[in-house]
Image 1: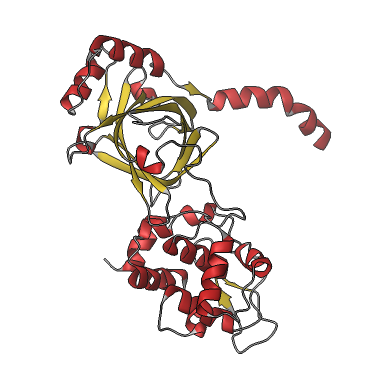
Image 2 (image 1 turned 180 degrees about the vertical axis):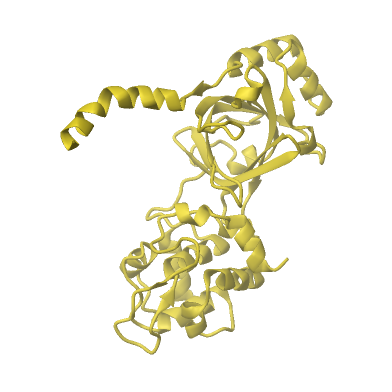
Length: 346
């Protein structure tokens, strides 16, 4: 598999959710230069963000410093970079593209940087930096002030890394009243962030949903989605202190197995377990019988002193039914609130 294909798989359709102008499906060409030899530039804002992710730049100021390190006379300053990253303008000096080539360490020309597709740029960045494709798929890491990420977390982000067994109520109507056992892995990324990979299995289909973890305000959040899918799930958790053996919070999204759209939300708990190859393979639906969760954790290699207490509290915490909104709920509200507008329009 080529680096470009790996990047495409890592990104999937996720790029259409980013706030990068004129990027969706095939990458379109954007505004013409006011001067210079190049007529157009392809996805320049996205290329800047991609370079920042690969080089571990957590702010626009850090990326700007990278430009100055390769060319002290660069036309890239913070004000201009803000506009370029937002897609509000393009560099007027062709030297900026040559500077970006030097920043990522490629021997290709500035013209190549401006004209190549985003997939080609990704392949070159991967080849030059050794970063994995998933890192390049991280949404905007170029905040104005930098991203605190693990601010307020005693022990830093490394405290959270590892594998966790996940327990939550099933969302599918076919499995109502049962629990879902999934798995979560938190791993450090090259950019200094944490990457979350959440997995579930049903009917022989194994879902792998990934995202960057955002930490702040004594909480952590991630919007995970499959690389080739467009049905995300948002997870928001309490931020624990060391040794961070449990993460609890809420998850929301849409039921994957349903005959109609079912926006859903429920509690979820992640309990740290040894990271073994068989963890994902043991994902399943199961009945919330007394002792079932404790037995699962023991099978995964967890030593539990208060087995019965942990098992019963976990079952009470997650419950057995999610909060869901049906199409009938929407229709009922619409019948009461839309009639006046429809009558006026008629």
